[in-house]
Amino acid sequence: MALIRSVFQDELDSVSQSLVDLTEMVATSMTKATTAILSCDLKLAEDVISTDEKIDDYQHDIDSRIIDIIARQQPVASDLRALVTALRMGSDLERMGDLAHHVAKLARLRHPECAIPLELIQTVTDMGRVAVAITTKTGVVISTRNIDLAVETERDDDEMDDLHRQLIGYLIEPKWKYGIETAIDLTLLGRYYERYADHAVSISRRVYFLVTGKFAS
Image 1 (cartoon, rainbow, N blue to C red):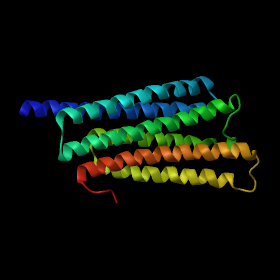
Image 2: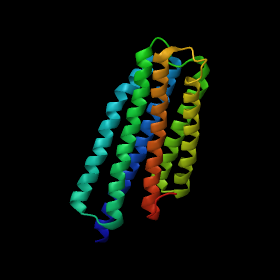
Image 3: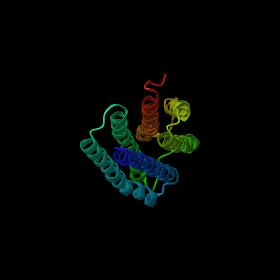
């Protein structure tokens, strides 16, 4: 029985490490996507777009392993909750990869022009920085189950929300001079970053619940 339990724990640990690996893949994609849209780098944008399929495949592999563990081990109570939580976290991370992919597609769509007006370069730069930082922290939360860090992601998300409001505020000012098409692009771009951070917070909240049995307030 002890050996069976040890094997099962090894499988759980492997799933957890794979989720951490996935956070690193997603963070790299968002880093590259942000650089691509700020610097009009078509090659980098194409790299992010092609990498999205790898992220999807990696997430599907995690799901398959979790389902296999459930079928073989028939876990109950906290073990089952951990596996179901891992399924949901993988889905959140896959969606984060999709959002980085959307940023890169926008960079490709507007190439060789830059999709970002000069006045908003810093805002988008900051949004990219916050997005990558919250992803990195989320990876630590997954690997350590540190509930204090899990709560911190809420504050990181507040910073992203502030930047998103700053971006939208600029778009609705009467002095806006870049036309409807650019306004639509930036509205979508702001939404991509905002939703990306929301998914990271969702993951941290799942870990918090997994550890405490309570929802983060």
